[in-house]
Image 1 (cartoon, rainbow, N blue to C red):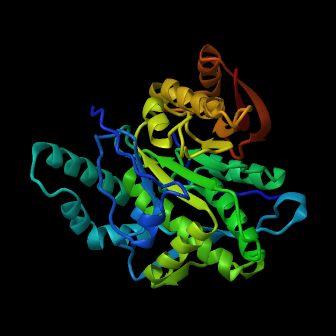
Image 2 (image 1 turned 60 degrees about the vertical axis):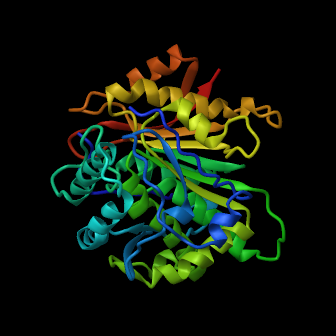
Image 3 (image 1 turned 90 degrees about the horizontal axis):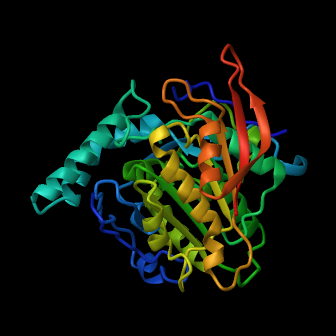
Length: 385
């Protein structure tokens, strides 16, 4: 049985919408023209959409990463280890070059630009911190691998959950669950390259922090491609860090692979604003970024965001109803704890809010926490009615 274990501590404006066409069909011009910095429009936390070609810029000459291995996937199959960029490597990049990134992103000297710059500086300072896992409305813990991410990835692998037209992961951070599904999907492509045409598949990773998406999440997708190509097996992985040299040389090859195989990889930064998510993903419109699976883990710890998160989950499930070609809901799977001491959120509150908004839940798996806490962890499905 595949299982992840983590030793880290547990978790105790503007109306502008910036839209980028990052569908597999619509991104051809962007991808073939090379890689450049995305225009950063914080707003300050208004949701913004970015194509992966806009996020893989400014990479250092070497990326250090670890491989999460020692697991068995569904039906006893052995899966590729999942790559995760090392936090020390991210902090090194921040200290070495992020001043130039900030200065390049905000150039007009306006009061609005200065506000955005100050927000990004605070965000990066917290990414460098060794004492704070999160700070409300500034940094939501995206560099840390929380237990729920492991529980969710475990569930996906052991049940062989299909991705259909694609996946969206809300509150992704290092994005272990969606990166697992992405690596599994592209590994199947690499093992059967003779197939000429593939239907479009979308992988959408959403996190509050743009810097987490750019420094951790997007590189993890690139590393998953490199890992799938090399076919490293769990037996080859020890307690060591790996290095990817000259990652920029791989980026254009990676983007070409995505385009050739009709795969879109996109990122959304900012708050749980369902109305703006609908606009960004073009729900019910031509060229929509469709998905069949909604994922999230450790996203119900904050009482203040439970309502907006619940609305976004239910709207994401219902998004197929807006498309004439679909007659079913997307599936939603969420990993969480029963209670989050010190920050207030509980599974019971989440269930009650979902009921008020026309949703329901089902427990798929219950995991009893180790040690003295004994806090139960859950993997649940969410339905919209």
